[in-house]
Length: 600
Image (cartoon, rainbow, N blue to C red):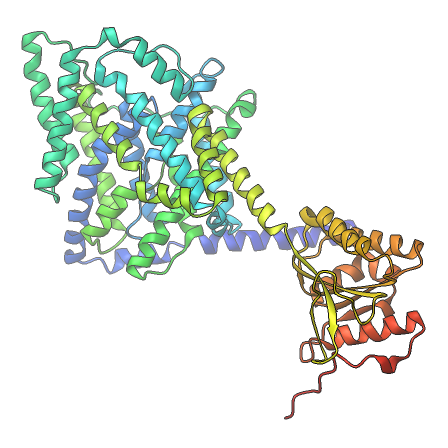
């Protein structure tokens, strides 16, 4: 046993190593980019890098503000992810960095555990854990699983998160602070209770910031409206100090200051932070792969989701060591990058270099940015997340989508967002199982004129009243076992004269152990009453389950008839002949279900 295990383990380790190197650490394509990098490509990439950097700087600050972190954490995250991502990404368009979704998820979760752990000291550990999860997901090629998350859950989550973003920033625009608040309704209630402390210069600054941003966006759609709005409001805020108006400003960063944060692995934090880390990794994967798919559909470029997830994992680990925050694929910055038409992945690298230089040199300038102006722009970002068209589709498509949306949305308002995501996914799975767990049961009878089977009409007298053919169609997984038994018992109770039951299963799929046991129990119950169970039209996977579980032997090999694809009704005819034998009748009475082979 020992001698056999060692070679197997060694072979498994070598395969895993080869897969790891093949998927993620093959820098050959990147070396080819550098080898063929021309002046024209550099100019194109550098221009795209400037465009993305001008948007990333104000967005990074905004997302850090949403997460309840110092604004430099968002800037560091944008720079680090842009510096590391291009070495491993497959897409030249996807831009990594902080996003609305990950920021508000971080904020919401820490609201509920802030008494147990300190945010700034535990954040590097969370980022390290998130990065490792994403790397493992990519290593085992599981990126495709993200497509099974219901879009309704995402819409419900984003809508709830947008309300939390707006509520969380409104008090900054009004010019006062809040005490401890754990949910959306706590934040709203405290905001209303402290309205008497409103600072009207802050409100005016926020309104001017929004108005400036809206005018620039409408009048000059190609310029970085957010960055210019903050620049203009910084000038207004600077001159407002001469009039002694009460307006708060961001804290400046010293020149050449970029602190290193070594993650502290404390297993006492694990139970508290694991749920949030898994939720962050999950949503980063869903968001990142969704953006990659969208851009791939537009451009026709090949898609390597596992490689892109690996890049996200590396970027999060980098952020854990260099004072960053959770990163994923950014929709707005990726869209801008796509519109800028970069030549290679190096466009993101130039963007990271530009942001790094701006941070190291221009950190003190952050002290001139008014907090109400930045918070007002964050509120506008939260409003932009509310998509009435998608909400309408989710509410009107089916009653199950309506229920999933409401559960996720209300959960996002009442509970931490990591729990709300799990709640929404759980609800969508339960409703799916309910839909899938309703197989079609119908009793068939013989049509002597047509020589075929047809659905039995209620109250109709059958040609063979002692034989019942029950057609089963649908998914036979564990969730339908009780329905499986109850429906068959109901059909048998309506006609006590039935002595032979033929289960016609040519359209029944995915039989599992639970339903295999249900079939065995049905056989045992019928046998005790002197009756017989036959099964016809058994497809190969179902037959394999019956055979491997031993149910086939207990029912009897002569009583189970596999499906013959060229003659789909022949197995039912054979089952009917077997039923006649068990009842002591002549085989010649069976005149239906005979199909000749097609002529060649």
